[in-house]
Length: 193
Image (tube, rainbow, N blue to C red; front, side, top):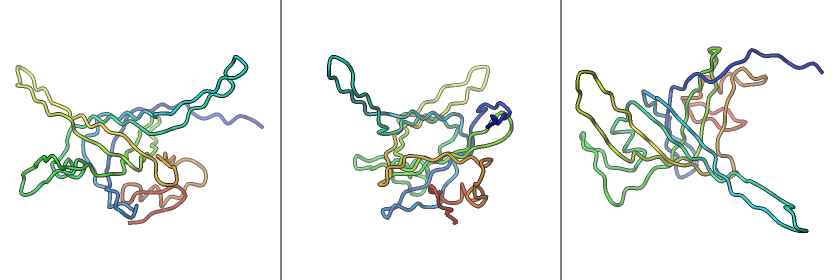
């Protein structure tokens, strides 16, 4: 069998970050776009175990246990911060309280490749938080501030953590790509709004 030679490509950037609140029944509300995604980094976390016998390592295993998430954004509207962190937001007032409880959300975004193509990513059960606020006085230049949002993800009841959708792959349903940011897509199922 001959090797398939494809054009080399590399991730060039990211955009179109959305969050969708997970309901008690496990379904999701309509995703909400957050403008100005500057950077996103996800790092898988693992449980590890080894077994020693006959004076050597006999079993070594790593099992995915979660995903750590770090986002740098240029904008975080109060409505979205309230959704993520369980804060109260009424009449322009965003209030933190000792009883705030982070919402579980799906996190969706688009990766843009050097050849102009895109892949779509989703992490299903994330809890995210804005941990600080900062600002600087300007001098002779404008110094825009970014917002750091961090969190982690758990698995769905079936064990799934995330999904990466490649629209150029054979057999991809075009409806799933079209509706990616309109409704939270699940593996093997096209979800329409």
